[in-house]
Image (cartoon, rainbow, N blue to C red; front, side, top):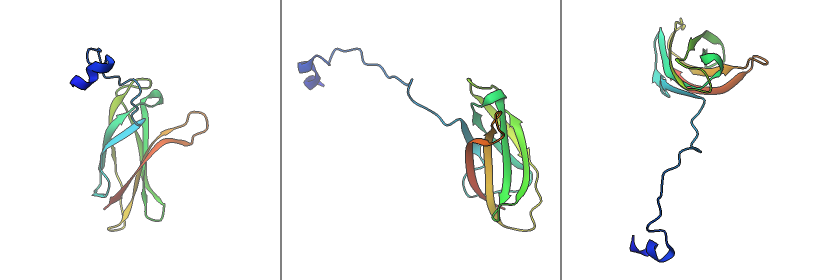
Length: 121
């Protein structure tokens, strides 16, 4: 650390600035990628979304929607809140697909901040 002293940095009050660190709007903690799931599927995470509404849908490998629903986070944007939800589905047997977790646009109904998690059942 002595080498800092020759340019006057050794005694500077350095601080950690986290103001420019960004998190995703939706952070899914369960299920995780390639997890084997069963019905009812428990979905949880943390989100910063409009009116605290987190939507989700489960699709099979062909893109067919098996189930969809929503959960309410503990706090809406601009704050962050934890969310938990359940999704009941009836697959025709074992298979693969994906869970999509997203915020629905109040403007046009499109999917915003979508998180896609590959799953198996």
